[in-house]
Image (cartoon, one colour):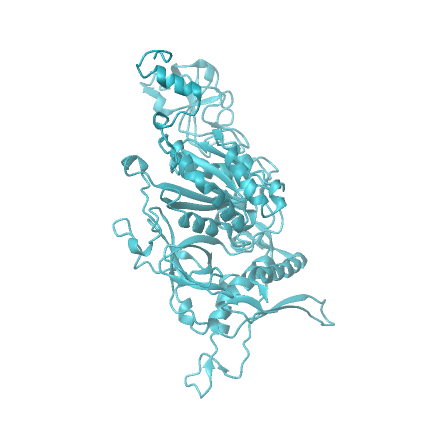
Length: 604
């Protein structure tokens, strides 16, 4: 049987080929919401098309400096101020967004001015209190959008903001990818129409067709998964002498209602998005902590129906997503889909997963539609017994007494284009969490307080490393992946740009351990170092390698983390203080004898 990732890749490959052959169409701007652009859109004019004031104030000649000046005109938004020239010794009143008159090269905000009594001839005067710099509070022509620049690219999804941007650049007709046409039919002698009032023996009402039609409107071979193993997919080429042939994607979804809708979300929705021109057709994913224990299937990956919520405290002392099961997960039990907004990707473990376990979740609907009647608040947080493996951590470290703030806070960063795009699951992150939790005592009471996934992008990696180090004061950051030779592997570069001291010994130990498993370990460019009071270590992206490297580092990590915090009293268990150690050479014995106060060692 195929794995889910392999099956989805086959579906998207076929959908992408069909999408490439689909014709685009031009639609009015007001009909483009929710569609996907089929061509780049360029700005025909610069924005702003004139020099505009950023604030209400006075357009001045910067070199004039402070002083009293006559106000020669007023330039307001919508007024082009044509024919007005600000010369040295004069100013013009301007409003926010108003055009800057010719001759002026700065704006002084009204807060830095004083109105003076009018002159006998009725003219206005103002006192400028500060010396402005040239260009101050002026938006130059094209500073927001330059003429002929690309404002939207082909394959971008058109939302409300994009509609506004298109209107800004004067686009009234948009070239978009056509919406795919979808047909749904159910098979089975036992099926009758939902409107059937009385069921005969052996009959059931057809719920799948109504459900899939609604899902299709909302979203405009066998598979190793649970629920939904009997899914089939095929490409059908139509043959009609009166029309050109075309390729149709056909899905054979399972008959059980839950399996049917789960497979629709996992395979058909991404295919529809691909056919519609989406550059990233995958459903979004988030990490959530389990509210209740959950048993994993040992043979097939389960997609467990759940309700995902964002809470002020997810059990780790920090805000995050929590997941609550919808109950019994039988494939025929459509009640398990009621209110469900996510599918939990339960790993192949064959054992009970404790409450508090972090797990990846696929979002299948808007989270705002989930029930909030039991939503925890700051005054009514989640019960601590739900998270036996997660210790509470204060988010305001400045308010925690030093004697109590001794816990080792660990953050785990998965660096992967594939995972960040939702094209594949994060296998390294959950493994790293498990390794840290199991080694908590050896690390001095370690707790994973933050996890994140970012693409292979230097700036995004740097931003989160700096935030975790400088703001969240995390003790240990483990980055997973992006340490190899490919052009997109940039984790070491991002790390080196933020650390203040390197720790090459740690990467040397990891390399030696990994070389025991594979010679390819020598291709690692991982780095490690210290920023402030945070130790940052680059680890491989392979889940097994994460466990191997952590095991190799454990003997020294606790000592290292204490040293970084300034505690130099951490000693090896067999360490003997120098004052109590036995002399080891003649010089040492002579020195001690001479220092004992018994006189010269040569005296009898």
